Length: 112
Length: 115
Image 1: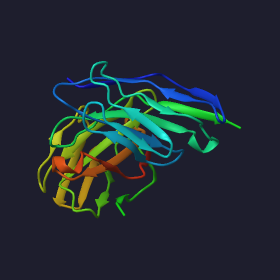
Image 2 (image 1 turned 90 degrees about the horizontal axis):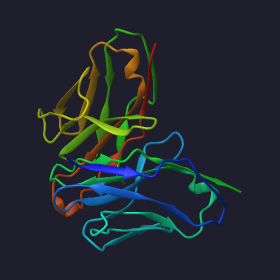
Image 3 (image 1 turned 180 degrees about the vertical axis):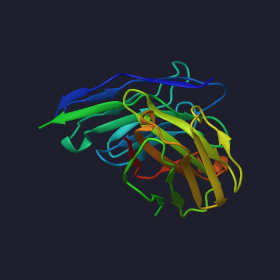
């Protein structure tokens, strides 16, 4: 079956630090990969996505590259802000029903 | 703008009560989902529906049922609430065609506490 593994948090960084949140997956076929973000007290919002190998998704300074050879989709940002503090979920989907399989989530805390 | 609306943000219910969580989407999406979110466990799929009156069990359907009488509305029902169902519940929807890139849109969540 499908599974997604994320690094456990919390990840605590100072403002303007470089961010990496690791994500690896197991899936049959050719899944689409996603990063969702959940700000405190809110639902999930799509942050970025990639639908095929070597695609790079990017949004709001975040980016992730679909690496089929390492089955990874690591999230990166060059300079984090306090407003980036949230929980980040890696997810995959590989069926027409668009069901998502989520990782456990990684909490990011950015200090001024 | 994409909109998935969950009717209740915060609920407190007693053990044994029947609980309804309502979700409405305005994007004419075929697919709708109910997830629960628990610390350390991420999101787990309870039920999903790919058409009106159709439903499929997800990973953790026990203790839950669903109803989809209209395309825009997907209800989650706890027949007899228990304390282990205290959680955050997230509704989501998506279009059924691969061309959409499989994007799923979420509501803001419903915090349910069962006492």
